[in-house]
Length: 279
Image (tube, rainbow, N blue to C red; front, side, top):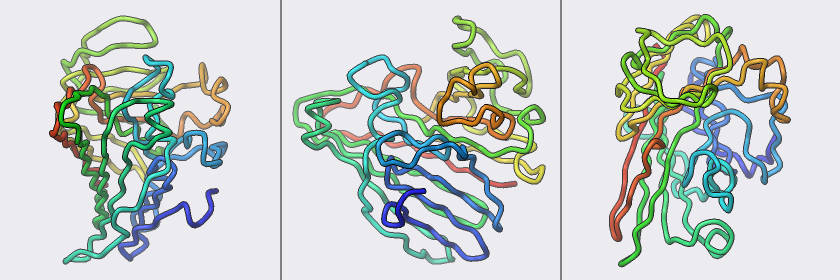
């Protein structure tokens, strides 16, 4: 695991906590009444260089590897973030922390030559985890484009028993078949290698049969896309930091803005949010 100084813990009491690794501002644990909700691979490498396999990585400014100069899924998940505001109790007992990432000489010279600032606010409630994100363009004359996504790995007892609502009728890009299709199922199930970008999805999804057979509600704002991913046995063995038999115990339901980039004009900001709720 990462050194203690690399980790920030939000503790609401009653064994309800959220742990953030400053490498990528990656949420690596979310426990509700001492039950872990987030999947992290047992083979994940915590070396402060490679992305963490599991948790909730922060994907910015690209999804995938369209620009080879930028790391796959962007540099934000492999950059060290700053603690803007340490965990602090709010009125009512909820706990808040704020993290930030901005351009520096290394990022501009090696990855992305733009001035930017990200703020990432987390609020831990009794059975909810809130994510409030802002992307700022402080330039007076330069516009930039980006993708943004929360790459959430949910822990599940058996992915084959999970169902995901809020995708019926949506078009999706299927990376396993190469093409654009329309979802005809009322609830999506996973029984094979799955890598789909669903477009213009509902602002709410419910995932059934997560930890202890419960449901997980995903609510999102300004995230028009939902990515569903599971490598299955076909590809789990090809991922060096992912156990070949771990795929039944995770499902990725990712809220994002990836089908089309966000165009951010000089002096403006983009905001998006997500709420995870154990039902």
